[in-house]
Image (tube, rainbow, N blue to C red; front, side, top):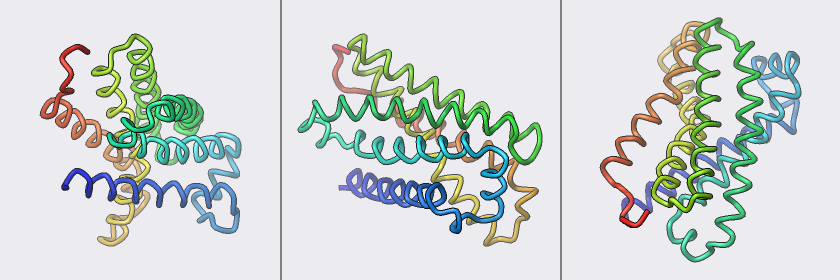
Length: 201
C-alpha cells in the first residue's frame, strides 16, 4: 500500500511539473521574467529542454509502475524508446543551457554535470536492456528517473526558499546541485536496500 501511495504521489508531482513546463513552452504570456530571459537568449535550447524533460517525466512515471509494466510489456518497450529519445533531447539541450546558466561557474558545473549524468544513466539503462541484463537495466533506469525528477525537486526547493525569504540570486547556485545530487543518493540507497529479485539477471 505504501509503495502504491508513493507512486501515485510521485506521478502527480511529475504530471504537475510537466504540465507547468509545457505551459511555459506553449504560452509565452505564462512565463515569469526569469524564464522569459532564458527564451530570449536560447529559444531553441529551452524549448527542446522543456519538451524533452516533460515527455520523459510523464513517460518515466508510468514505466516505473510494475503492474503496468508486467501487463503491457510491448507498450513498456515502446515507451522506453520514447523515454530514451526524450532524455536525449532534453539532456543535450539542458547541457547547452548550462553553459550559459545564471549564477556563474557554480551553476554551469552543477547543471552541466546533471545533464551529463542524465544522458549517461539513460544510455546505460538502454544498453543493459539490449544486452538482456534486466537487473542492471532496472538499476540504471531508477538512477535516470531520479535525475528526471530533478525538475520536481528544483521547484520544491524554489518554493521553500521563497517561503523562508532566501534571495533567488544567492540560492540558485546551490539549487543547481541540490536539485539532483540528493535524488541520486536516495535512489542508490534504494537500489542497495531493495535489489532486483531475479538472480538470473
